[in-house]
Image (cartoon, rainbow, N blue to C red):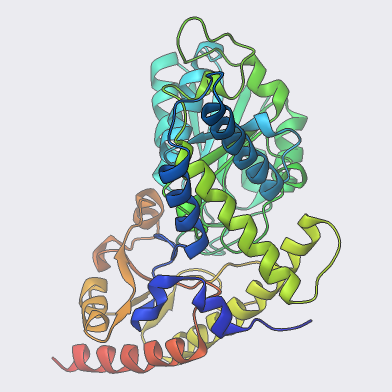
Amino acid sequence: MNTLDMDYVRSQFPMLADGYAYLDNAGGSAVLGRVADRVRDYLLNSSVQLGASYGGSVSAGQRVLEARESVAQLINAYHPEECVMGGSTTHLLQILCRAIAPSISRGDEIIVSHSDHEANIGPWQRLCEERGATLRIWSVDLQTLELELKDLDALLSPRTRYVAMTHASNILGSVNPVVEVARRVHAVGGKLCVDAVAYAPHRLVDVQASGADYYVFSFYKVFGPHFAVLWGHREALLELPSLNHFFIGQDVIPYKLQPGNLNYELSYGCMGIADYLLDIGQRLGASGSPRQIMQAAFDAFEVQEDLLAEILLTFLRETPGVRIIGKPRVTASDRVPTISFVVEGLQSEAVVRRIDEHGIGIRFGDFYARHLIEALGLGAHGGVIRVSIAHYNTVDEMHRLVEHLAQAITDLRQS
């Protein structure tokens, strides 16, 4: 397989031209120039209200529909109307739980993973509190740092209505076995909701293959604007009540779950993500369906990301007093390049602030996965140091990071 043309790749992200090493990509990726171009184009040429009979409104409406079709293709949705668009993953999960609420009653059980971002824990917890249901916690095994299927089996029962989990942890970097989880959840009559925010920048999403009933992620983590998509099986979405105006019926999907409607220009901007993936895939020599071409792009992304991740992981494994929080090596596509660690005797903030001085952007904290940080006893460090890599990062950037990390750790230990 051909490798990425890194000069071309980086040229597609205008922000990267400033020479700063952006290694906080799990917090928010660089944005494609073509995404911004589409947003600008829509605002300057199509910013009219939809649904009218005049030409400009009809044209604008068609653009918004094309954007939804592009997102459906990107995630392999069955039908474009299964794509509910909104401002963020957090917001869309709150919308989903609000819509689900009337169907939940005392005695029902909902399982959440404590390794998740709070976006996929808090709404389910509040739902249980409001409806008298029981919240059950699927905890990471403290030895393996994995969500073990045997632990899930002990929680599942005929009373299980929903299981909420992450496809990839934004702390551990682990890729979780959602297909197998879906099989087990469905066997007891439950439904699965997957947060893919930390997964979607690194693997081509396939909602059909995932087995999930609901699947959600944010585009600003996947080279796009601050916008998000919640996918659900058509049948599941049709069961939900309308949260929109009283005259928007239960059968009007996705509009019934988009109160106040969606952001038109950001929807149109999201088309630039698929444009880029197709462009990269074709430059790599891929052919076939659009999905096959996009898969070739993600395959090349994974090769680049694994190379960069192993540079950092090698340094961390070989540095005394450093504890990697997650898998210590890149093997068999079972982790994304989101790498967390702590240094014995040092506050994570102190290390990160030393790195700030060298034009390298990394981060410290709990990353809204506070339950996991507390369970792992990492609060004493002020959370973890997190380096989150994207395919547009370079070997040179990783070597710069390793050099300055080594110096920062040495200096702080001596001070």
